[in-house]
Length: 239
Length: 239
DNA sequence: ATTTGATCTTACATTTACCTTAATTCTTTT
DNA sequence: AAAAGAATTAAGGTAAATGTAAGATCAAAT
Image 1 (cartoon, each protein chain N blue to C red):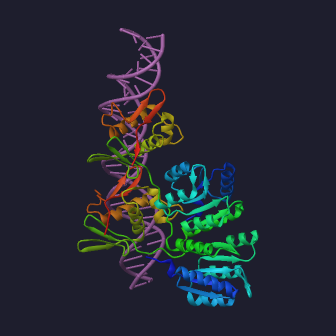
Image 2: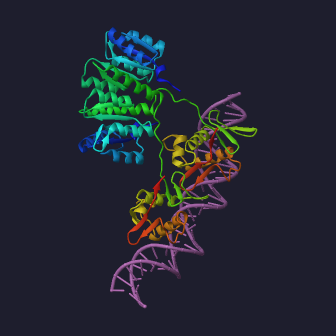
Image 3: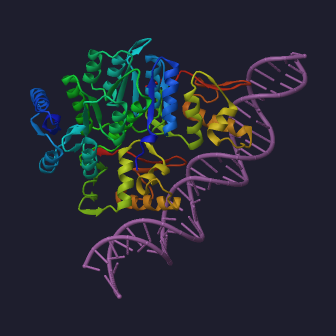
């Protein structure tokens, strides 16, 4: 279950008191990961380093304006942004919203309203109304074709189907192919956030998966184990 | 490609002029499917018949209030709703947003602002922001590329993988590249806050790390030891 | 130069994470 | 109810990663 309180939030404002106030009320409400920045410069740095899930952005900053910064961020990622502005000018509001901001609030504002609006945005992010188009990847490992729509693994003429766990694991691995995925993260993908009994269980499933996707399961070429760190799926090419 | 202008919109307001005005500006902007209703009764009917994708909902209606209607709709579907209200009362606004409305606008409003806010909502519906997964740094030491996502060290064609301890140490060193990191701090990064047996252990791991990232491990150019203070990773450039 | 303490290096011992297989339990299908 | 399929548990085995120790080297200080 996705949880909006796990979101990484970035507050960009040059007034220390306001930053503190926002951070306080958000923390009090249960948000755990709140970063803040006083300048565009800082904001860029935190953005690149912490990869926030949403930004509360002041329009006027010491070393630049929020609109430009917004454009910068949006050129890289469609991250949700809520503008804060000291001036309640129609033009500014229309500009901000026209650029594609998720909301535009003018100071002074009700802290509670800001929080509700932020939560609305995050909710839409995590629980989108239109279900995401369910087209799953089809890819190739060597001469083996894996179709996550059908849940099949085909090499030449013989074809097997993936079980639920195998599917979940492979999907997660493929989503991050080329990168290390921790065992923990894999377990979460297959069993959810609750406790998963044996850590060995994961290994057994990995083994079974290897039996289906590897030529020699004992000497894997695609689903590699990275001792002490996790597993990694390599050279998966989309087709 | 999903197109927000294909959205089916429902306007619920008892003032005929306002309905017409909204419909006109939305149509002028390019929305094709706009339905309207003057009462709760009508709204229910259109809702069930036309299955709109978003609703613009007046708070005060002849035969009931918008909040109740909102609850009705939302109990059936997580449809986006933008409230319109004649009264600019903080309480109402907080109530509406608190119920989970996507936006809350008070009359009189700028038609253009309403449209922008509506489009923002629809955009989020059709193009949801998917939070980025954790991205670890990739950087270069001389002609050696280190990818902490993959846990690899690549120089030219030969590539090695980092072990768990090496990974932890290098990550910590990179986080503070250019600065001295104390041995203590490195140990904490790799072994946790509990006691770590031999201080020599760290040196051995540093050595092993150097064997992977340095050209000549005995004359390090990147992972330097600062006698009496700790270690320092230099000239690590993000790529 | 000599001493001293810190850091390096290497080889070896140990541990731990992971693998594998098979038996058992749970779930779904017929 | 039986059977098949899937998931979990358990236990023994293995190699890679880590830890240890001891001698070598270095760099600063006297």
